[in-house]
Image (cartoon, rainbow, N blue to C red; front, side, top):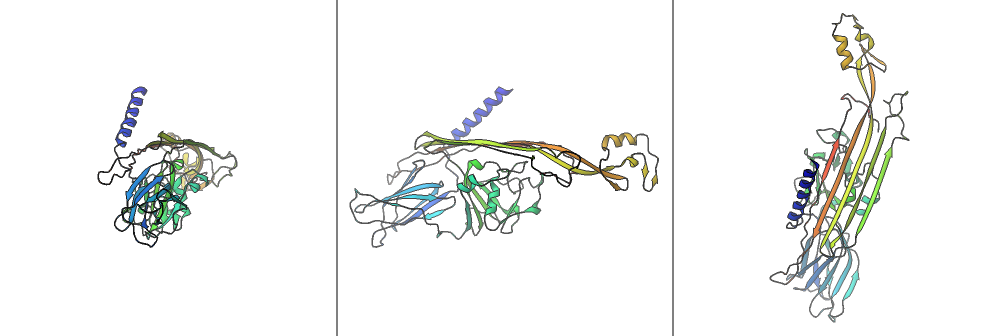
Length: 427
């Protein structure tokens, strides 16, 4: 039974990778645009513009139009350099341009008259001021994602760093609406937000915050960065009356890099909560989160891979309180008087209701305090394959770059044996 399942899974992975090689990337990434002029400010048409990704060596080539303008859409976030040249002018190279997800950077270039053999190099980041869009947004970058401590390592928690984003505590935490904590952006309802991963909507079935039954959205190590759009974003996003969380995953590069991690949390230093019995030990709790990443080249400057795996193993102790018949009620002795019980009633009471172990609630009822355990085991896995090729354009002889990618998979499981009447939870 195991071998056929393995063969089917392997065939599925191979089929997805083969299909992916013919697909164009759907990532909502970054873009570059600008105007090429001479020393007097006159536009230079038909100038050669070459954009190179520093990490992967991917090349995008084009020529400026009659107004001297160029635009390079759908670029992966990362570092780039631009090379601009025109006959009779000194070539110029602009290096160290860092692009973030959703950024539309404007890089204007001025060419000076001079020998073609000498190239002038200018280093500097792209302008921070956004002159192309009126959207209000914030960026959660690679540094924040990797270095800020996260209880549960759920990356949507980092959206709370942005202005106007608050936790929606009244949205609940249940099976119907999802276990993942909800957020509100500029006062909108949680189901009015949109979560995008590499341009694909990942909202849950109720259009709320995605996540697992354990209440976490794993995959922090697989996410490069994400943008939180809070207001006035463009129509390309659509369908959302609230905000948009636009995340992109990491990709392999020419350098092989990997990482590993393990986070452990337990209840050793926890205090008892209000519902924990004073004469019993604190309910058991521990959480292991471990995983790693690995990325690098398959063919340098052409094909790259990136793999990520993360697992969460948790044993979560729950203390609850419910009401059961007290010992007098089991014998038919009620505050209003004694009643005669059918001979079968005591047997049903013994089967359906445990004996009270807490204080009396009056009216023939008493408290029953219990402790149960919710075991959780879930994992997140991702495999990404990027392939870039160059093809000669029929008209201009320029080269084009296309990215194909395949991402999978997510699976979670949780078993709960807690009574439905639980009123207290030990965290």
